[in-house]
Image (cartoon, rainbow, N blue to C red; front, side):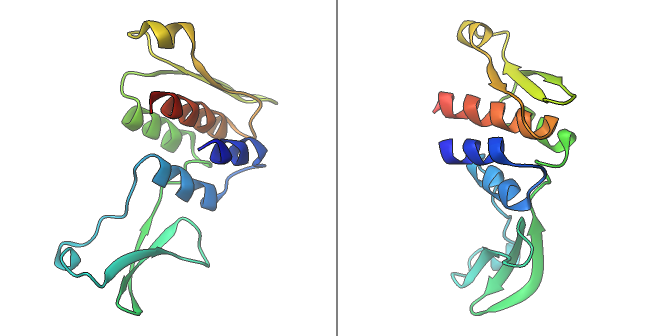
Length: 141
C-alpha cells in the first residue's frame, strides 16, 4: 500500500487506474451475476481501454456486462462514502485551496485522537482524503 499512497501523492488529478487500485485495496470486487456465480469460466477482467471498468468474460469472450469502480479520485462524495464504509465512526476534516489537506480521526479511540492520519498538499481534496484513508487502513492491519 505504500506504493499506492506515493502514486496518490504524485497524482496531478483524477485517475481511473488509481480508482481501481484504491477500490481493490479497500476490498471492492465486481459482483458476479447470479447466473454465472458457479461457472468456473466466468471472471472479471479490467478493461485495457477504460481503466476502472471491469468486463465480465465467459471463457475467452467478453459478454458485454461491465462494472465500474466509483470515481474516488474525482469525487469528494465518493471518497467520503469510502471512508464511511472502511472506517465507520471516523471523523474527516478537509481543507480546500491551493494545498488541499484532509485529516481522519476517531474520537472514540484514544490512539486515533492523539495521532490522526493526514493527507497533505494533494492535487485535490478527494485525493488528500484517500491518502489519509489508506494510511489509517494500513495502520489498522
